Image 1 (cartoon, helix red, strand yellow):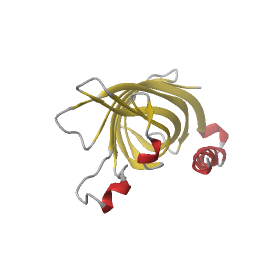
Image 2: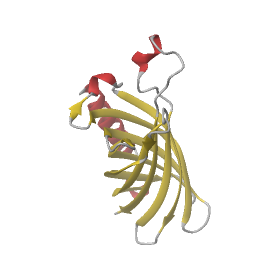
Image 3: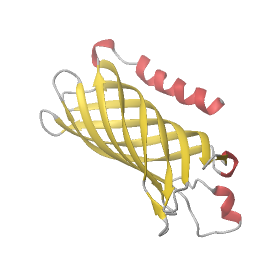
Image 4: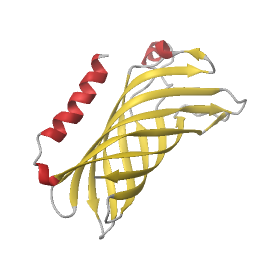
Length: 186
């Protein structure tokens, strides 16, 4: 619970300390195609979703900082039909750069708190770390009225099974997520 409160506090702290005329708020959501890095031959991407709130602080005509607070359903799907569902509260902090009038590139870190983990109908949250960390890279298109579309790839660097380290030193499990989003800034 402390981790969730901290992520929300950081999000609002970043947005409140900025000048109002350079700050916009919005919403976003979309499709996740998620898997894990321990992806053997029996795994597929799991289609899922993400949604949440966004703020954008414009630093210059071409550069902005965009903290987001997103609920994100991740995990992976096995060939046999079994699904691993990892649900996170994520805080990406993106740096956006407009390369043309409407096209932008984005990059930045992401912090996540694991809310639940299920394999089939069984809860397995105690086998995963509560915290995830990684980086995002993406590309998007902004329309004049505030509507935007973007594609982003998240690659986790935190080992989700740190308890395995003492037993299997070469096995790591990391989140990998392709996100396709639609957003709107007010």
